[in-house]
Length: 435
Image (cartoon, rainbow, N blue to C red; front, side):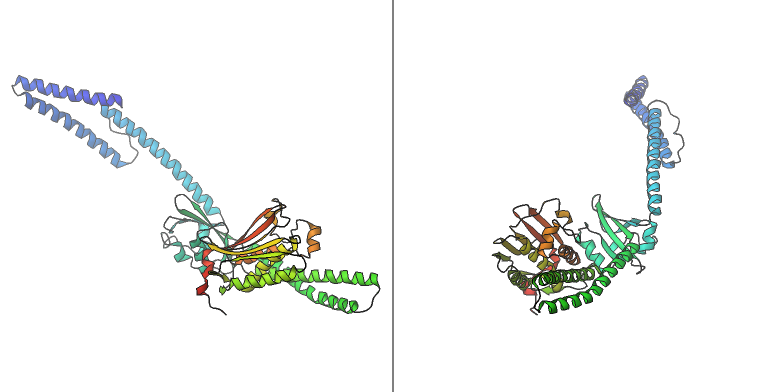
């Protein structure tokens, strides 16, 4: 291209000089110069028109024949055009393979643009979500998926956990929605059919619930007879054995109660409705129960309660969750230890925490603490009378309230269990009517 520029300048100078010389012969030098420049301009306008017409055709034909600078320009434009077509064909191939592969997936995949409008989706989205390519493209997502639970999940902007809801076009199908941010402000929605998994989970839950329910009657009978026998004068070895049987029967009753509660919590993912809760009164009642449980152990209780805010939710479930955390602190904090109950609110939401200066927990155990029946120390848990289901119950209660738990613990220094609630679950005290 450097040679082309030199050639253009050379041709301009040559025609101008020729026109000037011819004009001088006729004693009109400037007229000859202007004629030479006009001839040079018309020549290049003609070549430009040929180039423009060729580019307009876009049919892949060869460029016009030309010599000099225009010939080099035509050849370079032809090479650029071929490279562009090859690149375009390559990208079209990638898009085509992506569309073919995504169309073969059984999961619905939807791309949502930065304005929350539908941009593209695969065939499974037609079947699972009822989207129609002829009418729904470019429409807002929440105008088509109108379930209030999905709208709330979508608007929150926190997509770490998936959402499970029935299909909007077939209530027999259970879908798991997962949103992922990508690019500037785009979203990828994946909806997976988990109907079979949900049915298996329901079968498991029904079995646990039925088995637990059936165990209550024989346990009640056993405990009744044990209490009757222990009211009598018995030989010391026999009395000791019956007392141990009674202790284990009580423990089994507690386990059955927790299993039934856990099964009920698992029956639905979120609470059906929300009620204002006087959380200050709730925490104080739990504090009184904890003091009764810690009688004779010298525990010191400290309360730090934000009196300006209360919480929305189900009072019975939250009392069960908070009680589990507080009673665990009582069980596993040595005598004369300190237990602190806090309720505080900031821009991230409401936070209820239970801190102790007990034995602490090693980091390797923390990720598994909310699993059913997980025990750090089997002998210690048995001695405390725990069922191994307390933190699992806490986790499920919090999930149903759109909340989560965090655990901070250092061996030998104590532990802090914190329940984090989103801002829209927190209300000012003045907005709560006393019941």
